[in-house]
Length: 147
Length: 147
DNA sequence: CTTGACCTTCCCATCATGGGAAGCACGACA
DNA sequence: TGTCGTGCTTCCCATGATGGGAAGGTCAAG
Image 1 (cartoon, rainbow over the protein chains, first blue to last red):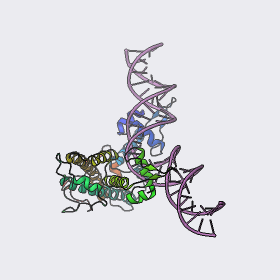
Image 2: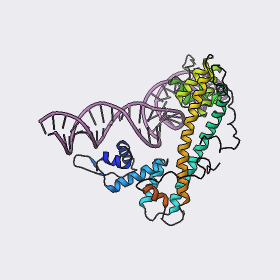
Image 3: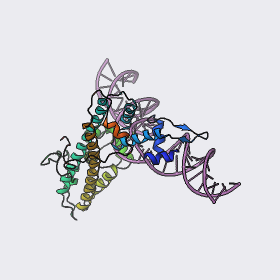
Image 4: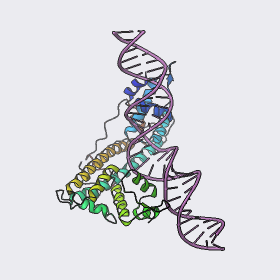
């Protein structure tokens, strides 16, 4: 299987497959005499594993750990779970930061009349010496997410 | 005011102030004969404006637009509001993506016993040919955020 | 044998930020 | 006035994950 077919089969671009190989995240496949990479089903399987981990937002270094654990049949499931939970915590942290930004900005936008007049609380706030504290939600963190 | 003091006064590192100047986001300040940058209060004010916009997650190009609107006293508040609302939409989009990841991963972690045994649904799922659909929440998008 | 699609490596760009080196400027203190 | 430490200057490099594109070799179909 050429790199193009492996890319189609795994959902990772050929460009990224070469990159993952260069940083040692996936094994180097065999080469034909002329230098073409040839992928086995097992190697495509690894590529798919990597893609699924990437789709869940894992950074490459943690994907590296996950691949290692996956291939080590004597691993403890707790090791995997800890990596997953640490990543969940990181995602939640990022979500909270974004929610704080969105909340503040939604609040500012709501108080801006948004017409032809130049008067604008959004700019006023950005220009203020000290930023206003993040907008307090009625039910902090749960409402107004537009979902 | 030297760049170090301007950095302390605005909360933007000297490194970033020079970078913002190099991309034309903030004006080039006067220089002393020996080449030191000298910042006026007005320039520090712009730097603070930029920092507040950055704190709200605006990308540099949108900050550029906001600075322009801020300095144009004949702007329509609607122009500002549209930029803000577009950014809120972008934040919400990112939040939804992260929530989908976190939700799926929380679900997988919950079904992983997390002990010494190697058996692990997290790895099973990552190794599956096709990834499971994102975990369906009981109240989609609103619960389990740990907030 | 030509043509077009595919592969190879290598370099560059993103976005916002930081690190560090080499060299000059400034201020305080002896 | 000389010296020392701190701060400033520019320039280059790195991050993380991805894409773009050039220059050149390979393969398969016509």
